[in-house]
Length: 302
Ligand SMILES: [Zn+2]
Ligand SMILES: [Zn+2]
Image (tube, rainbow, N blue to C red; front, side):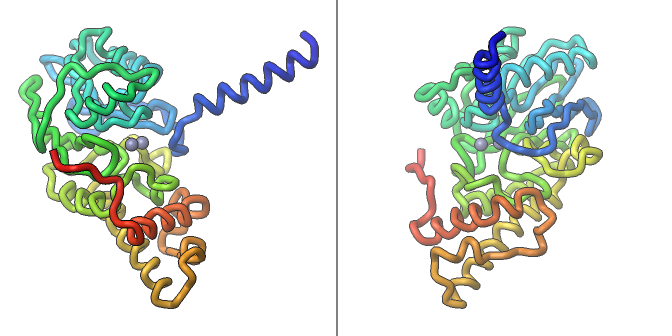
């Protein structure tokens, strides 16, 4: 091969890699770990974490992510049980979470989404998204499987559309996408987060019936991440948002010019959290714009 072709190939590979790289940069762990009887956390090695419930009457999957992730998860499930996969649940509309439903539909599962997420995916489908089989409405839906109840909670416009928090009270377990990320500041520019509703939702999550959860992203150390997250992390996420807003108001009061506030804010108590150096100023811009412009995103009720 000529040098020029090698160069072209190298450039093409870099482009392909950057396209395939995960949106979230957390520890790329690949694992399966039983966090409660019959409930497993699953790390796809791509910064995204899913969960599945194994019963004597089928399997329920939480968060398909994408086809490659889903295929790996099906392999992990097959190492544990031959029970059919009955349900694959989507937490919300974003393509980087709600893709890959097709690989579960292909093995006979029904995919599940809140109507607001389903409407979005119908209007703007991604390359790897599929049409949900079960679409539910309102604030609460239950799915029974193998004697366990899966509670689907829609808590409002906190992040994305139709954001569902899943709770299996019999197992004292939950699945939480994007709303709680242990040991990390807010993701980047906090895309598609309504800050006030996010805070309110975190308070509601603390009231739900679980002790351990799988969070879709985590910056916990590699040896701890497979054990999931807890209400301590939910509380810490809420406190971080309160502290960030407080630090912005403190700068207002000092008379710091508004355009200098995001880079002036410091929260040393979070200095060890992932993203502190790169993202804190972006987080501050996002919260400050919300204070300035009014809460967004926003959609009419119903
Ligand atoms: Zn999202
Ligand atoms: Zn995410």
